[in-house]
Length: 313
Image 1 (cartoon, rainbow, N blue to C red):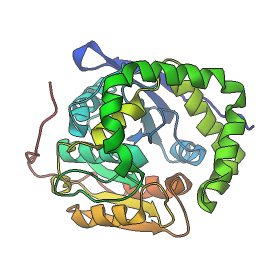
Image 2 (image 1 turned 45 degrees about the horizontal axis):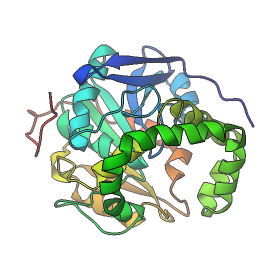
Image 3 (image 1 turned 135 degrees about the vertical axis):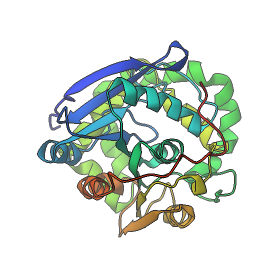
């Protein structure tokens, strides 16, 4: 197993309700800021090695964020996906960031879009990599693994916290075999994901993030499943900032058609198919994603629109 370099900086900030939100930084301390929002499951270190290297070489400051219930972020269930942007605002303020770009992988996609909807005066652009599409509201679409979420959500709502700690304990118990488990999982995945998980540096990053995130709890993915079965608190039409969406056409978890569907409904979106690649394909084009987003902004923005819901105080 390859060694993986630790983040340049890790910490946490106070957010609403006396909670803490933890983060990890890669790249240069005064570089152009980019929030990187992990998938489901995942944590703040789920940032590809290529992206970390690109940030150092191009004066970027990548900030990975633990959603509530993973790593050292306090467990919490938002009212809806949009509600999370109240915490993002405080995190950005505490880090001294006026404007920034946001990237969301898979389950992080809805949270990245929420940032674009709620904070158009601060977000220069949004990147989505194989992002989840809504199951409720005007933008809803059927199919994919997320379609089974409504069946699991009622049960998870009742046992979310104890299950979170039980999952973390289970991961800690099998830690010596985690590398073997990831390799075995990769064998049964489509070609693109299988090849990515076979790369030593990617496997090391994935394993480091998994173990670090599960030190205390594994509640974030459970909360994600619950929130993805509800209306997100905003519609695609509310995301007026530029969005660039990448999606593998062999994605077996979030169908390629979901990305096409969402890009067509966003006011300012460009969709890119990653040919022959599957769900983790966005990790393979991380440098392209960062380079593309850096071309978006700084820009003049119109007065903030009111979306169908507001971040809760």
